[in-house]
Image (cartoon, rainbow, N blue to C red; front, side, top):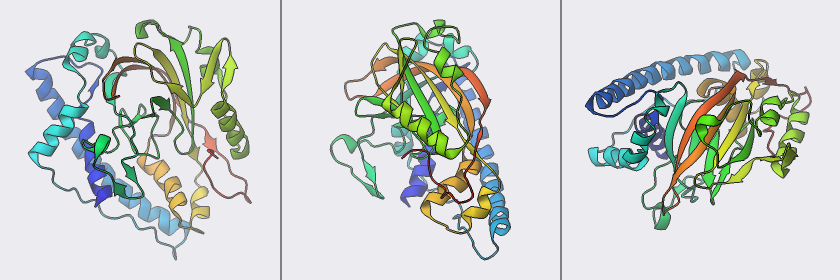
Length: 320
């Protein structure tokens, strides 16, 4: 039931953060409600399509092996629970008003990110201390989906005061640009040359080497590129996420071992948006409890490469 609760919470998140083109007033509230309802219907259609595709994938891979994907069950949250989630995740009204013109631009957004206090571990939820007002998944965000995410496919995570990008089968690269206005950030400024020029390897062995190199930190053009940076107020950053796709023939190999790790590969192509995305963002607010507010914009979008595993190689993440 925990997973179903988390699923609903993530579905609800899309209606509480601000993205491009949103202003103030009752008209915007009505428009947000309309969009939320459209997103709900779209997600229901997507879920039905995913179930069909999973069935076809299973039959294609091996008729004797069946991957079980439970039918979606949406628990009912009380009005109070819904209100609490919306209130906690909504950016401060002052910030929304301050950046409303910026947010009218395409592919921009204003979100809140909560610290990951390890409130969830091995299907156990802690509810005391910092976890008293837990909103599952509120510490993981996907710029590719423009929504909060889970622990497998996130783009950015806030943990121990650090911003982290190291999700499943993804090459995340973060760089601290300094205290510069987000409006002035473009592909031409310092710090973006290495980021945009980085060429992700497609052979899994080489991709793993690149992951290790970036995890240790790479110095180029006076900037440091890494998987983690310190989260600082009034600081601007850039992030590139290469979310690898997989080849269709990987499905045949998955049938040999229906493990939890393999399920990540299956969900990868059906439940996530696998692209190569570069964004710039700025921390415009930091609350006393560690929550941060991020203003962001998209800089570059490309088709993600397909990662290649050798025939004798065991399927695994590029993260050690």
